[in-house]
Length: 405
Image 1 (cartoon, rainbow, N blue to C red):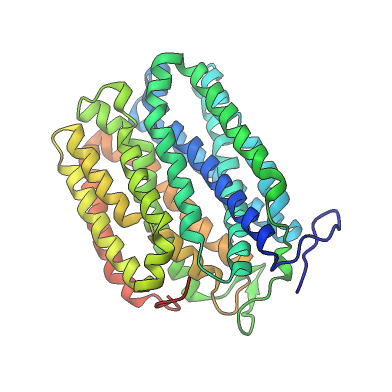
Image 2 (image 1 turned 90 degrees about the vertical axis):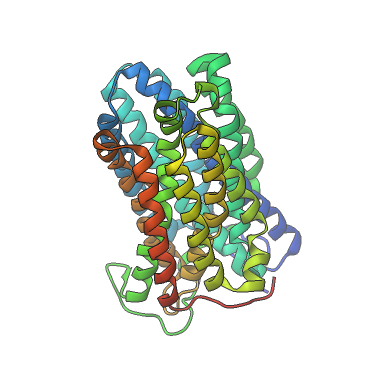
């Protein structure tokens, strides 16, 4: 039996204490839910913000790039802090700083101030994401069974809640009322989770097998970067749905504002269901089968969304896409966290950096394509890329087969 030590030097509960681990698992799940809840409410806010500021899709894309820069910088900085202090304190404070982000976006008086508010949102989404994934990996290792899919399922549940209620709240309460209510609800979830996160100190977690050399803390493991590219391409379509689906429904398919968030909600709904059951699916069929099948199903869904002539059919397409994409990211995160010769914190930092590149930077350039062509073409293009990813998944190293849960 081992214990871990937090920043204050206080011994944490034994790593194999069932009750403490169960509470820690629910706390990490709550953190994922809160993060997804903010993102879910961000999606229906975008068309309102675009109209209020009077900006084009290309300008919005440039602002999203700044959002991505903030996330990536904070992600790298957060990874350094997680390596130094452990994930629990970083998760606590970054999640707290995320709470007022939608209020800041709402009260920002102009384009420049809004861009700075987007920088704030990106920074604390990125830093929190790294910390909660690192903490979740620690709990998964201590539990000795796969639980990563369920964490991401709670993120999707947060997205569903935000997508289903965001447009209606904005319509009834206005932008500011919506932002205040979302911030208060998020704070309540995070206050509950605060004392329940598992303490850790990730540098003490040994790499699996002989540790591989690194340069400036960056592991020299070519296979890990293959996972990184796959993670980037898995996150990019998800980021495109988050940032552009509401605008797609409203501008290209003539959907009312109150239902503009339904595309992301439909996508997140199936993501949530599949992720909450994903650990058992992975155990039964193996990660490689789940990864390949997921890419194919997601491609079919995005092809339907891109070809839709009404917002209802677009939502059906996003619903199907969520079924496929649900467990691709959890599989990649879990596999990277066990990569031979690389400490989990370093592996998660690499994978998350690539993932955020796909989630934030690639969708930022969608505005340029959409202004020249259409968002329908963008979603159809992602369908083709996902099919190629399914084929590439056959080459991924160290992906587990069937395992116990």
